[in-house]
Every structure is written in C-alpha cells, then in structure tokens.
Image (cartoon, rainbow, N blue to C red; front, side):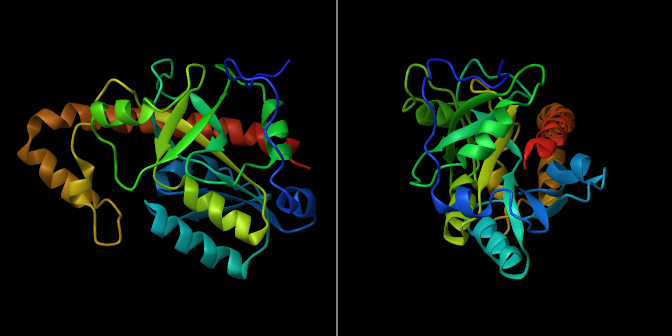
Amino acid sequence: MSSLKRPGHSGSTTDNGEACRSNFGCDTPQILVVAALRYELATLRADANPELAFLETGEGIANAERQLEGWLAQNGARAVLSIGFAGALSASLKVADLVIADRIRDSSEKPCEKLLTAAKEVQIEPPARLGVAFTSQEILWQSQSKRALASSLGDNEIGFVDMESTAIASVCARRGIPFLIIRSISDLLGEDLPLDFNQYRTPDGRVRSSRVMKAALLRPGSLKGLFLLRKRSKLCAHRMADFVHRLVPLIH
C-alpha cells in the first residue's frame, strides 16, 4: 500500500514526455539534489552517497534558474530532486510534513511520472502527501499572504509555497531531465515568521544572515521565533534526508 496519498485525488499525473522516457534510468553519472540553501542539503550531504550530486542555488527563481542551468551545462544527471523547506498553504499540514508536488502552479511542466511512482513506494511515517507547488517572488512571512494564496486551492487539494519550483521545472523541461519536487513544511498556514526576511535580502535575492541577526538584536521579541525556526529547520532537514535515502534505491 502506498504511503503517498492525496485526499480526493484519483488518477495519475501525466508523464512529462521525453524527459521521463529518454533520461530516467539511463546511465548518466548521478542524481542531482538541488536546494536553495546549504543547510537544506547538509544532513543529506553528510552521508556522501556516491549516487548523489548536490547544488545550492540560493533563494528565488532567478538564482535557481541560473545555477541549475550552469551546473547542467557542464554535468550530466539522470534526474533532478529539488528539496527544501516551504510554507504550508493548508491547515492540515504540520511542521516537518513532507509534500511531493504532483502539480506546479503557473507552470505547464509536470514532475516525472516514473519518479512519482518511485516516491509512492517510499515507506515513511508520517507518510508524505501529494500537493500543489506554488512559487512566490518574495518570502511570504505573514499568515494573511499564505491564506490569500491558499484560497485558490480546490476543496480536496493541499499546497505549499516556496521560491524556486517553477524555475526547477522550467530548466529541467528544457534540458529533457526528469525532476521531482519535495518539500518539508517549516512554517504553518496560520502563523507569521518572526521577521520580514525580505528586508534582509541582497540585490541577488539571497537572505543575508548577518542582517537578520542585527535586526533580531534590535527586536528581541523575534529571537524566540528565530530559535524555533532554526529548530524546525533541523527537523525538516532530517525528514528530507530520510525520505531521499529511501527514494534513491527505487530510482532505476
């Protein structure tokens, strides 16, 4: 019995064409694991699995597209696994829950059906779920912004928001590489982040940690929230790593 479920969903995602058929399972070097931030990859990277290569892109659509295009221009990959943290767009999603995108809002590209099938065979508790990936140009740090985005979901749909999914899908489709997007929930639908992290981004879109710490010292009330977010991030990273460890042997 599959541990990957989507409430109210019957039927399967269509195959993303030649990307799945031509590349999945072919004898190219590694599976590329992509994340926006170094600490999203750290737990998985520590195990030094020779089947995996890793790429930190930085936050946002432009960074993800530029970094992934550059890596793939020089290296082969038989599949791309996009991992990372995301905000919940559904009240049923809890901290560290895993959601696999079977649809990407504002993108015509679809995750590879064969990778989705492999993901459905992963046994993990609590089980991962299927949902809709939303991509935002900025960090949605307030609950009201997440709720506004969530209002477009169907009654039986769940969703998450990040800042890179459409870019990953676009690059992989152009390159003809199968991809899968996996996210672990770091902040809930009904809660705000401790700070507006958009204020501490550099011109290239990355959040500067030194600016965040300076802002936190000026707003001591945010420190508790920042420490909680750090604790959650560690839990999310371990959950992501556990899932990928179980998934990789199923990718043939």
